Length: 378
Ligand code: SF4
Image (cartoon, rainbow, N blue to C red):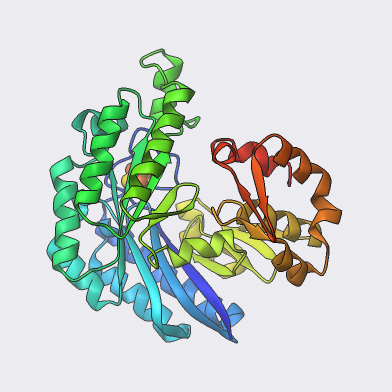
C-alpha cells in the first residue's frame, strides 16, 4: 500500500501578523468556521474516492492560518471524516498547529481525544520587543503556558517555532530565545529567518524607512548559533530550518522533501500525487462555492520526467543527509553524474556541496546559500 500524507489548511487567524504572507483571513465568525469545516469534510470524502484506493494515510497535518482558532469539535469532525474515508494507520502522525493565545488545556485534551499526537506551537520569540515588532497576538508567558499545557495533557511530541533575523534582535537575545525554548523540553524546534514579503505591512514599513533590516552576516551568525546550541542539546539538525531529538523528526514534513505523495484539503492546500502537482484556490469564497474537487483546483502541473528528477535533487538536498546517487538511479534508471555532473562539480568546487561516497549534501556554506544551489538544478 502506498503511504499518503494529508495536509488540512485552516485559513483563519485572530488577526494578521505584520510579516504574514500565508493564506489566512482574520475571520473569527463561528458560522464561517463551521461552514468551512463542512466543506473540508466534503472534500475529504471526494478526494478519498478519487485518490484513496490502495493508499494508507500515515501523516495528517492541520496547518494554517491558526487551526486552534476554530472549535476543537470541528477539528475532531474533520479528523473523523478522514478516518472514515481514508485508511489511517494506527501510528499515524497527527499534528496540529497552535497559536499560544488560542490555546487552553481543554483544547489540548480535545485534540488528544480526536487522535492528535503532535502539536506545533507558534512561539516565534520570548522577547516582548520581537513579538511586538512581528505583531504576534500573544505574550511570551502565554507561549510558555501553551507548551506546559500541551505537556500536561499528555502530548509528548511538541514542536516550537522560533524566528530569527528580526530587526532589534541581537545574538544575545536570540541565544536567550533558544535556551528558553530548550528549557521547555520540546522534541522538535523549527527556526526560520524572517522574510519580508511584498504586500505585508512589514514590507510597507521597510519602504517607508520605518526600520532597518538586520544585516546578512548577523542573520547567518544567528542561524549557525541555533545549529550549534541545538546540536549541543542533543538535537539532530535534519533539514535547513528544522532540528529534532532523534526519532522525532516531522514525518509529515519529510514527505515534502522526499517526493512522497500527499493530498491537501482546504483553501490554498497543495497536493502531489502520481507525479502531478495541484493546488486548491486560495480565495475563500471560491473554495466555499466550488461544487467539486476539480472546481476548486485552480492550478495543476503534470511533472515531466525532468521535473521529477530535478525536484528529487533540490528538495532532497534540503535534508542535511542530502541525497543518494543509488536512490536516484533506483527511482529514475538514470545516472546522476551523467545528468548533473557539470553543475554538481562546480558546486563542489565552490564549497557549497560535498560528496561522501554515495551521498551528496550541502556544506555549512551551502546551507547559507541553499537557494543558489537549488537554482542550479531547476
Ligand atoms: S498566526 Fe501565522 S498564519 Fe496567522 S497571521 Fe500570524 S503568521 Fe500568519
